Image 1 (spheres, rainbow, N blue to C red):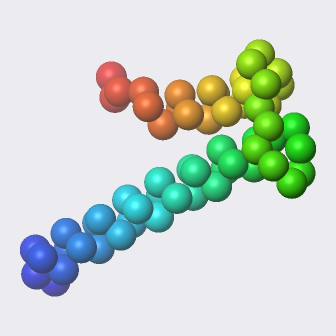
Image 2: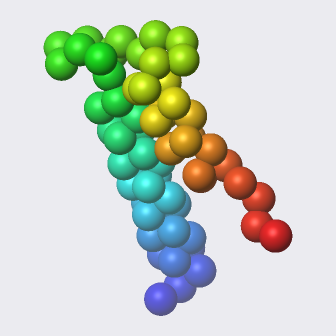
Length: 59
């Protein structure tokens, strides 16, 4: 596999991971038909935990 093809595959895999995380964040809502996440609600806490889990730097 050439570097260009490999790099494209890596970009596509990264984009898929980003979109999957965005979908999980969007699902954390108090209402089923809209995105409602009130400050300090259980959904707010879950969203912060999900977001933070992907933002930690390696040790």
